[in-house]
Image (cartoon, rainbow, N blue to C red; front, side):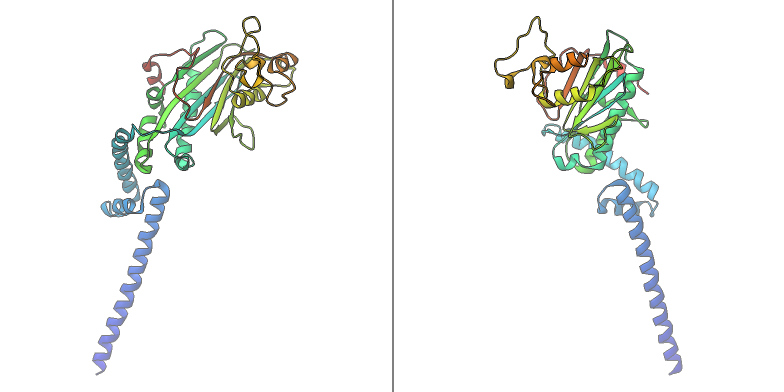
Length: 316
C-alpha cells in the first residue's frame, strides 16, 4: 500500500514538473514569437513557421521571413502593378542650397499611416537629398533633376536598392505601392536660396516633413529681410499656380479665382495683397518652384532636365 502511494506521488510530481516545464517553454516560445512579430511586422502564422523551421533562432527566422517577403513582394508587385495607387504621401528635405521632394503612393490611406511606409518615404527623401549634394552638376542658378519611378528604385539605402525595400513592403502588406517621382535641386550661387513645405504642416517646422501636398522653391532675397521662403511655399501649395508669370507677357485673369500666374494671385496669407506686391515689399525674386499633389494625374513636369538612369545608379 505504501509503495503504491509513493508511486502515485512520484507520478503526480512528475506531471506537475512537466506541466510547469511546458508552461515555461510555451511562455518562452510566445515571447520569441511576439518579439519577432513586433520587429518584422509579419503575421503570427508566418513568424511561428519561421521559428519552427529555424529552431527558435530569431535571427535566422527574420532573415528567412525577409527573403520570403521579398520574393512574394516581387510577385505581388507584378500582380498588383495594374491596381491604382493614388493615396500616399509626399515629403521634403532641404537646406539653404539643396532640396528634395519625393512622392510615394499606395492604395489606401490606412497603409500610408504604416510606420514602414513612412520610414521608406523618409529614406527615399534622404537619398534624394544626398544625391542633390553629390551628383548634380552646376547649370544656371538652380540645377534640377527629376527622377522617375525606375530611377528612384535604383537609389541605395543602407546597401539596398529602394526597389528591394519596396518589394519587402509590398510582400508584408499585400497592397500595391509605387515610388512615383522625385525632384532634386541644388542652388549654384550663395544668393539663391532653397525652401520647401508640406501640408498638413508639422507642429514644429523642420528640414524634413511629409504630407499630402509639397513644394520646392528657389528664390533670391537679401539676408537683412525677413525670410519669405516658407510662406511663399505655403501659398504655392495652397493656390497651385501653373507658372510664375511675367508682367510684360501675362495679364491678370478677370476672375481672381481663375488666376494661374503666381505673381497675380491673391496672397494666401493676406488676400488684400497680390503675390507680386508681397515680393516687391520683401525684395524677393522667385527663380523657380515645383508643386506635388499626392496622386495627381501623370504629366511631364516643365523645365526639368531628364538625365540618364546610369547617373542615378552611381549613387553610393
